[in-house]
Image (cartoon, rainbow over all chains, first blue to last red; front, side, top):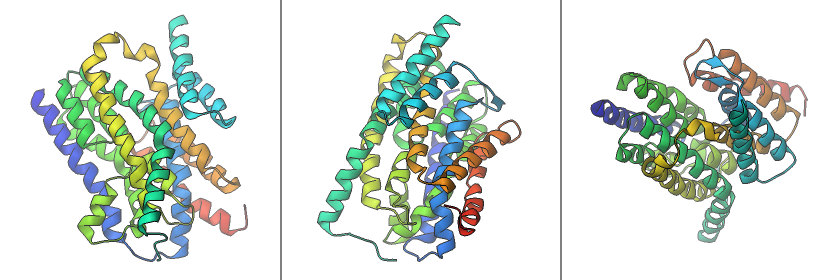
Length: 103
Length: 232
């Protein structure tokens, strides 16, 4: 298993560096058409929302609602009401842990 | 494309602003990487492997995915493929960032390595350009706490018997929820966020992990059309 672990680390390092390099190498310093700029500015909300949803309502490749879903929801309410990120995260963790304690 | 404010003073201001803006994310990143260190150790990774992985891969979701696959008996190839899919979102992010990076190709590739989700989102000026010094300034503390948190989790993880009961899995989504809320500025960005989330969720059970998130970037095309038709 030790060999697997180190090969995994080497492979992950390589693919991560490659993926991060492709855009900058291909498009560095270029002028982009306005349409593409419009798409770029809208990618952030789409990508980030997808990260939130897939890590809140799913575990692996299964939909899943659990204590963590409730915790994240509580954190979300704090964030929408302009509470600090650290407070929101601590609340989310605490609520999740407490729910797991009682269920 | 003009690169605004590349004077030494402008760089320093951007670096510092990025550093300050990233402090909460760096703090949360510490907790997140601590949970990674614990998970890696519980999955049979030597502490040094977990720490090295955080130091040279430095991509949270990919690290979690790869460790989970190795822990379940998967091959290195399967783990790397899953990590690549989790990181596939850095492809559109890098394409968006590319035009804002000056210099020769290898130097641009090196600068592109500083992209992490929070830094990329915050360095986005909202007009299609990025403040690269803000990006560098906000990634630096996140890198430090990412490696420090992993070290703490991997070496001191024995303090926590059952990591899942601690609710650490609520950290990551809350972290990204804060970034989404910062991105939602009008009805189109809200619609794109909701549609991106729903598209990803609808693909979770049918596509391999990571692909649903990559697919959500396509929603930006729909959002642009909506905006061009006059919606705010």
